Length: 376
Ligand code: MG
Image (tube, rainbow, N blue to C red; front, side, top):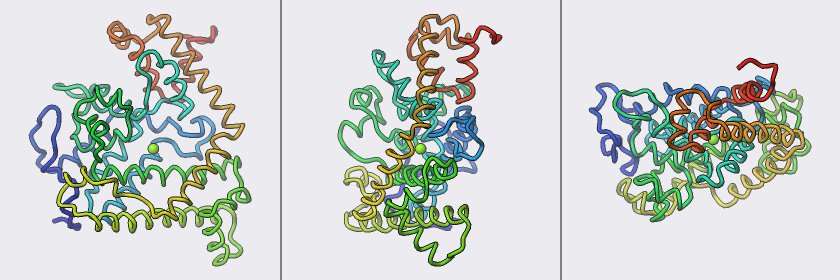
């Protein structure tokens, strides 16, 4: 028995566009649950524990990793899906898979790998997440990848260049004919953004790279900080931050649910197909969208470009670039299975190998290649 009545325009696993390799239905789980389970059991998912977004893994155990980030996204996405009577299992699967293609060292690593791959088709982490679930996980006897449903795959591919979309077949089409993915995919994208903006504030404050005083110029933070201070005038800093951040998250999530519900009510949606043809329907109200944008700008300026973060990013870029050049110049340095693959497509094999590395693996691998005193 279901606790939730799904909206007629929610994604329905029984009406899924399907898997590349047809499989019989599970006796106990719907297809989206099954996809989520495949993602959790994948190698790439376990590696998220040692990959980071802003801070490098060895900088401390206090900070978010891509694994905890993905869990936070899944939690928020499920909550929003349930409020809007959409399919929670689909949002959960998309959320847990959305960052599988990230390189080590967050955006610094991705930018460096993209630069290395400039003449060979480039590197997009989003496209790489799809590549992980479509090709790179080698676990099943009958197919490469995880053979996920179309709906989960389209949700993973949030954005994509037109050039790549043309080569992707089914999941690339919507970028060419300008249609939308399911509401579940749309909302998971917002859950991702709400999660990282707010946990970056929390991590930024705890690392002392940003301060409460600086953040007081950000409306969304300042308003909620005042509410907490008025209610609890003597609160210690740690609790003050958490009470503020949780109110910020709540403001964003409640606004997103209410505004999206209004958008949905305004158009006539009969089914998922009408969702695809409608304009994007999940979104913030204008005033909260502006506050969210202000928060993002603050983080970009004060945290992501903090000189200490810049220093770490520069090191990360150097490591990724030197690994790439080292392998490209001598594929004999690659592990055996990648050497065979490199014979077919050298740059892509090297990019896949590097993208799969965790932060600490990349640091160790770099030392093994370049420090003479290291063994192998
Ligand atoms: Mg993310």
